[in-house]
Amino acid sequence: MSRPEIRQWRPEPTPPPDLAALLGQVARGDHRAFELVYAELSGPVYGVVRQVLRDPAQSEEVAQEVLLEIWRTASRYDQDRGSAAAWALTIAHRRAVDRVRSENACSRREQKAAEPEPAEDDVAETVAATLEYQRVRRCMGGLTELQRESIKLAYYSGYSYPQVAQLLGVALGTVKTRIRDGLIRMRDCMEVTW
Amino acid sequence: MKVIGDDLHVLTGSYVLDAVSDAELAEFEHHLQHCPTCAAEVRGLRETAARLALARAFAPPPRMEQRVLAATYRTRQLPPLPREQVRAAGRFPRHLAVVSFPRRLAVPRRLAVLAAAASVAAALALGASQLSAQHQLDRARTTAIARVVTAPDARVETARTSAGGSVTVVTSAALREAVVSPAGLAPLSSGRVYQVWVLSPSGARSAGLLHDTSLLASAVRSGDRIGITVEPAGGRTHPTTSPVAILPV
Image (cartoon, rainbow over all chains, first blue to last red; front, side, top):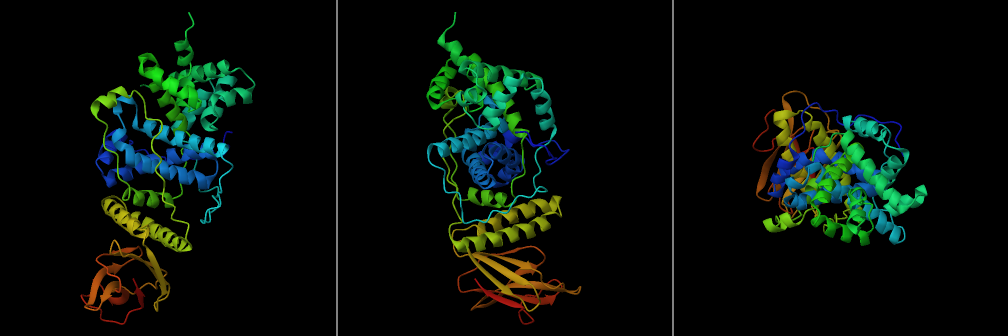
């Protein structure tokens, strides 16, 4: 589950642009603003989709859809309800999970596209290991084993909580509670303010 | 006293991780609208989940940017929601209509276009590394070029040049634009440059000087041809040497 070789992804010292303001511009059809949004969000979007789907070709396809969705629905982002990154990553994670679940429902989709997919070599695999990664790892360390596993299986592997319960051999109610308690602990540990 | 509300409340965590079954989802989202405490908790936990995503950021393949940026030009945006609806919807919309990404890869011709697009993008990346002031210009040009190479009617022509290497021209008749990309042209002595011409029955019109990166030629009509000549530095208003390459558009 955890990736052993983690490398830096965009170690940029410059302050991140104001995504919420940029999304406002994007909602008004500003392509230039969208390029900046893309620069900011494509890594996290692709990363989380890939984390769930694993298959690079499929992840690329879904990440493209998500980024285009951000363009299309920028006017629906509401600052009062959360950060721009959370809005975008919510779309990304849901889209990835929807893909997993629809694939499980139907038989496995024909995945042989006409496009020859270049093998992603290790050098190109610049996994996010920003401060965020370190912080998440540290805070994950503060959870109980069951909390940590439940959260990872649900979020990173895209399982529903009943599936998580089955995988871990615990009661449904237990998993629900552990996920919530674990996330609350993560929230406080990472000093998330919203 | 244990009530159903409490049971639902425990779902906040599973909800932000998208781990709730569809049946419970509707019930929980309904509950959210009447439970400000739950809504507040969901907000905080959603931000927390976003951190889990950020921790897994992973640079996507470079070609993705061109595709997405080009697609935005073909995609109409949603209007904002009326204010009262914004207030009522105490959550992020779950089921947004699926935007299908055009599958441009079904036909072999597409591969050629995309291969050309990739080399154009690579060439642009080199050009864009000059940075800052030039950067914004390059971005605009990249976008314009991406629009051409991903146009539904994009056509690709490649020809060897008598100056070595090759030139690829991607044309969109609908956009009336062509992208000219050099590859491996012999370096010229100082004082000489490659110049690109749009050749039509009415004569030759300069489309600009060709450096290491791609060049965008506008107002191109079908039946025109693209010619490349070697000219004195700064270029000329009319070609003064025979072309090293001529390609149809």
